[in-house]
Length: 83
Image (cartoon, rainbow, N blue to C red):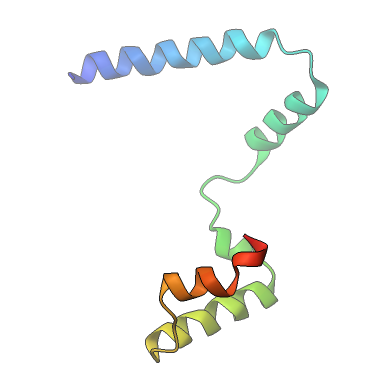
């Protein structure tokens, strides 16, 4: 697909979104769109999670590096009652 065609498709998509937004009646949807518009660009999710979550992720990575892991099949059996 040529660059010009991709650009036309992109512009067409933007126009379709504008048309859709102008017809919205849902205040919650409008608020979410406003928040999306006002949010800083390219946020790193790592900066948005709690320290406890970061610690848990780091521990998981350490476990993987140390070979303290179970195959997926075993994990499914262990947690089957919750899946």
